[in-house]
Image (tube, rainbow, N blue to C red; front, side, top):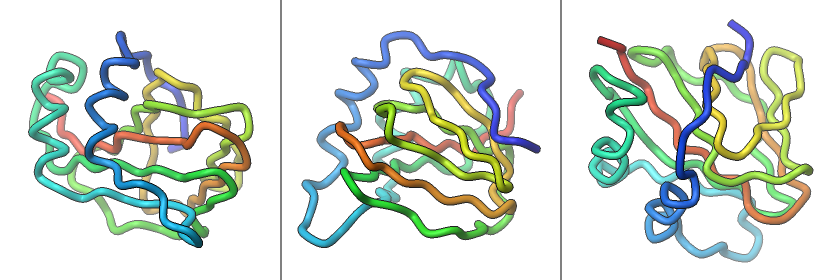
Length: 138
């Protein structure tokens, strides 16, 4: 499965506001942060249940600051389908999935196969922040 856009969320500004207090401030020398916390699901599920109806197995935030990157890697097989909701991005933020580069667009929803090698870079401003959801649709 390729990394592909499958929709757009409404009111991405409001969703970004929900993420802001959950993402820590950037630390020198650290290019990215992943926030794994039950609080992520608690905050976003009520707002996005109609977009992602069904069981949410996992939800987390992934932020890459200016000049940060996430090295190529494969994740474990996720329960359900993996979605990326792009809460914030810029023209210099890119995601590599299965050898193909994609520029994630703010407000778009993408689907991906987490066991295919993928990586991300952000050479610009603002930070690139994704809400990652593993869900099984109803």
